[in-house]
Length: 290
Image 1 (cartoon, rainbow, N blue to C red):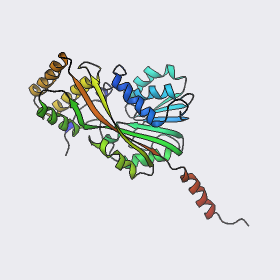
Image 2 (image 1 turned 90 degrees about the vertical axis):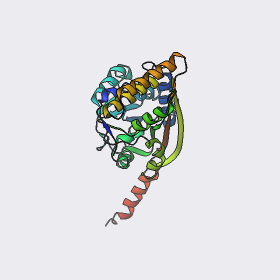
Image 3 (image 1 turned 180 degrees about the vertical axis):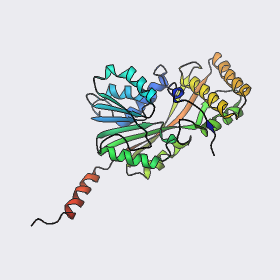
């Protein structure tokens, strides 16, 4: 049974800031996988679990005249996304508050492409979610499914044994905003996608690397969040967690602090033959005209 830790979704919004080059590089890679390079932009693309819009910003820059849809369960995240991106979107951005454990608020076949990053571990039924994504994609439409593997986090910390214990405990802790927890789900994405109605085209991994132990750099934000979450579980005393953070700050004072994590991604496609097959079946089933 995983530990549970009370935690407001607001703290999740502080993870990623475009001020960190690692964040910009991460979300540019996701957009590249989706095929939103110049001349390849899909007509309608959705970020499912968009948070406060870091990926949406990249998609808006690349999607030309296409529509961009952001869906998230956290209203504060959507408010922040609207504040940051709404005016500059030229009316091409639509934001929707929706629970991703329920049917998506999108019509059948309404999307050319979709992206879902860092969401799947918190859903109790990833298989049902991918069936929904299959429904809202047009035939031939693509999905990029991406997730970090939290058990691969690296901190340049003097106490390696303690850091390993903290990372493993954080990986396995279910925070209050999560419906489920699987901190190692990144390494299983290809398996989850492989049993969905979508066809897997590509499986890849990348390393996100951030330097500097200060806000809003990813390594600093994750170190703070690891400590905050584990404080709430009571598994580690405050003196241990505070000492660990102090040791990271000391490493940074020598200019040696580094944090990294592995991101895994799969690109899937809805078979174009699904509609043709459906039409063929209906033609076969149609009774002859009199």
